[in-house]
Length: 137
Image (cartoon, rainbow, N blue to C red; front, top):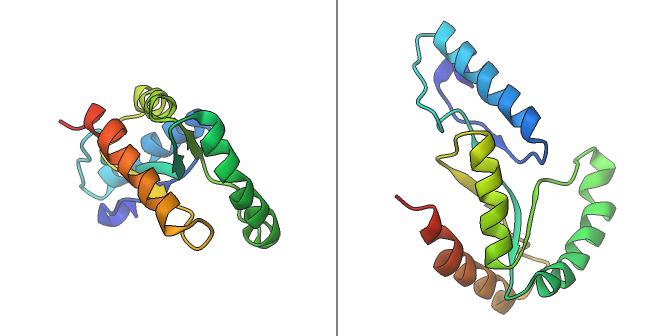
């Protein structure tokens, strides 16, 4: 990707790993004549469930956890970064990641097909109204 200045998506929990990916990407892009602005090395994110409370979000996660153990895991797909909780919890998680690596793009997986339309819409509304504004510039 770095050769073409494309942007990979990194859904990793390990922020040291993210620092390494960002650094290697910048260096490799430079070899190919690309000057990558901080935050454009990769998109970062994870599986997102935003609810009024952490307890409610984690209750909604139980079916996703079951699904992940039954389907993607058997093909070697590990669980992505979990962004599960109240708006305040998600803000802290994103801020923690943004303090470790510059982030201009947040990629979110939502549990469509597992959650009801109402659950997904409520999660997206909470995220859009209470989390995104804290990171918009």
